[in-house]
Amino acid sequence: MLKAINPATGSEIKEIEEVQLSQAGRIFQQAEHAQKEWQEKSLKERLAYYKTLRLLMASKLDQITTIIHADTGKPKAEALATDIMPVIDSIQHLEKTAETVLGRQNQTTPVLFWGKKSYIEYMARGTVLIISPWNYPLQLAMVPVLSALAGGNSVILKPSEITPLTGKLIELLFKEAGFPEGIVQVAQGGKELGEALVKEKPDYIFFTGSVKTGKIIQEQAAKDLIPTTLELGGKDPLIVFDDANLDRAAKAAVWGAFTNSGQVCMSTERVYVQRAVYQTFVRKVQELTMNLKQGSSLNDDIGSMTFPHQVDVVKKQVADAVNNGAKLAAGCIPAEWEEDSMFIKPMVLIDVNQDMEIMQEETFGPVMPIMPFDTEEEAVELANGTIYGLNASVWSSDIERAERVVSKLVTGNAVVNDVMLTVMNPNLPFGGAKQSGIGRYHGEGGLRIFCHEKSVMTDTG
Ligand code: ADP
Image (cartoon, rainbow, N blue to C red):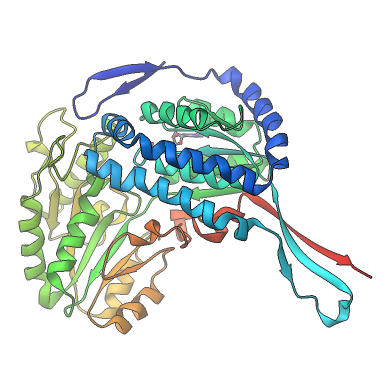
């Protein structure tokens, strides 16, 4: 049994049944069986289920929000805006675009092959395994599930064991929306179940989680040449030039660093500010941070952490920074944290340097370390100076300069004069460079990746 624990209160909500490891093979058999009929349906027929699901979700917003709030400890407004609405938006986007993206793509034929026609066809891969995390337990599970289903695949979803209420919710939503039996199976369990499912040799694996687990999965998948998408961690920089709108940049940095208590793969984890405006920027951020309201009610800005282990990671990194000379401009040192509480006060750290753990390793918590820089070249070098490359944010009133800097950043995404936004646009492929991952979700590629691309040339003579 998995225990659903409300991280904000520490109380157990209920127990959720786990799938036994020995059932992994049977789950795959059911998925293969269901997929055969699903791929025979036209894409239009498949998308009809999407509309039912979308309307169902829209009619249950309150209920869904309450479940995610209890499962993760994030405020309800945050659950609604950043976990639930993006799913509804993605469903609608797929309804509008999937036929164009996955339909036959006619191509021109070179003169050498006159009399023949050329096209590309997108064929289902078969059974897709999706392994999802706990920080956005609805969005990071449902968006890949729906993308894979559109391509005619069946899906086995292994959601995070840390947020089992949302896993159960997803199962019920697909059932209630009338999707055919076996086409989406939600297999609840821990990492051992994830391992067992990977060993069943799915036709594709879509994984979102830590770099460490991503590498384990990639290694296992490589044995059978199973293609994978890996959406992994980040250490996203935010660069503020001296001509930036500092009020807006400070607000964006606070949102970017502290939303979801910093438990976001594209959280603002490092801030670099040009020296002339460094002190002013720090003061602005300090004031905004100290005014944030933390708690579980509707008016609160920040909720609790979700996963106890993550509190330890944050504690270790902050303690290391402070021991090496960093100072807190907001928040308090780990020794002063309330014992066993999952509510960590947002922290602003100054006097940090690039070699500290807090500037190199993913924190996944409410910490914003800020460091000054002098030149554009230095900012680029600092921003690129980690193993990660997910997202970045660049602030300047000179858009040409900001976009020039963006071009030099080794990241999968970048935002000028705002934070995080790319993931909110389902037309834009989202994913990482370097150790932040392989492959993309969203965009045309994020949909086509779940299909074999078949090139056909037909002699029409
Ligand atoms: P996090 O630290 O964010 O929980 P993980 O990478 O550990 O990140 O977990 C993300 C997802 O991967 C979860 O659903 C988890 O159960 C699953 N998982 C963890 N380890 C493995 C593994 N070795 N094989 C397959 N799935 C795994």
